[in-house]
Amino acid sequence: MSWVDEFAPKQMKDIVGQQAQVKQIADFIRTFPQKRRALMVWGPTGCGKTSSVYAVARELGLELHELNASDVRNKSELEPLLNHILGQQSLFGTKKLILIDELEGISGQKDRGAVPTIAGMIPKSAFPIILVCENPEGNKVKPLKKVSTLFEFHELNHLDIKEVLKRICKEKNVKFDDKSLAQLARNSGGDLRAAITDLQVLSADGNLSEGDVLASSPRDLTESMQDALTKVFKTLSADVAKGTFNNIMENIDELFLWMEENLPAEYTKPFDISRAMSALARADEFFARIRKWQYYRYYVYCYDLLSVGVALAKDERYSHSISYKPSSRILKMWIAKQKHARAKGIASKLAKITHTSQTRAYDTTVPYLKHLTKKGMIHRLDLDDEELEWLKTH
Image (cartoon, rainbow, N blue to C red; front, side, top):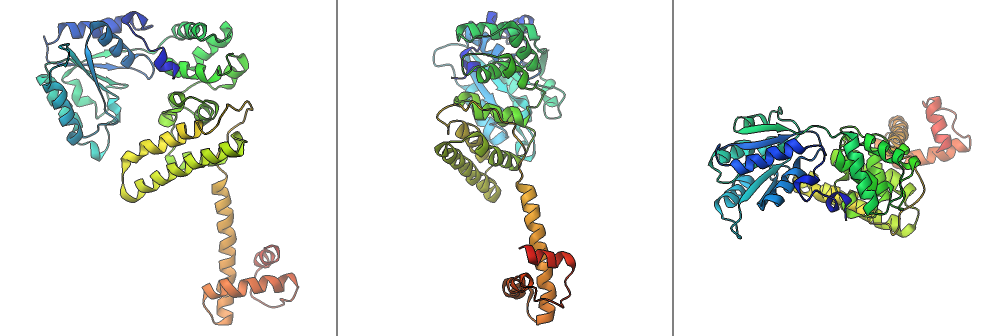
């Protein structure tokens, strides 16, 4: 089980560093519906926005309904769901709370109508609605500000993060020292969720060493490919691996190349390599369907296979340390293309002399010339030194 889920705050008092913000959420719910407005909670990743909403709902005994804007992205999908939630009473007679998370996930042509649908539902809702985003100034989010009360969550202090990590280490019997824990907290960049995930990965053997912490690079707003691959290759937990590539600023084509290049270096057991490559191949099948039929929903399968599929392909964690590198396939393809271009150039010249097609010259005459060149039997053909050298060496 992911430690992020296992140690998620259960009550309002469990939220660290955001006490005033948690109280604001609770007050908004208690005083609803004095104003038919939503509460827009915003702030950096991992600062406790969504966790706070869950903790408040649990403590106030509310029935929480969450919609993720990244999954439900257009009017045709969103409107029926909201109508169903808003028009139906709770099964147990409790009050409802509607949470719409990751508003930044609404983007592009296919999402047209989603924001106006949400904005139109807010004044009519008999239940409080809380919107969660990182930046309320985004073009897609701006229309919702008119019908919302905004409240900011600030970046967590590394000392608060350190205290949470210390408590987890004690409960999980992880050996640690204060210096390593403090460095891990600083590396997180204020993202508590990322810090807990890093702790779980780095302490897989029950020990958090200073060397492991120093080797892990400090987090930026976007995760590096090195960090993401380390998380996938070094964990045996599906929960830790899932969503690893969500913050990677690489397109999926390059992600396939990174995986293909580094997987055989990380996994040394043939059976592990076979299972991991099968997951990679299956992900490529889904990606091909996306390209052919524009079934964009298949992206979730691609990313799950590339992360969870590869992570669970091994039976045990490999202890060796590897510096992951970009794919060399592009360079190999370029070299192969250059070789092919030279052969085609030779075939083009031979086609004129032999009065045949370039394709026929390429298929039949070039191999014959290669044999003659090695025997030193070619004395007069309009080939330059590089073309002659290519015939001798290939």
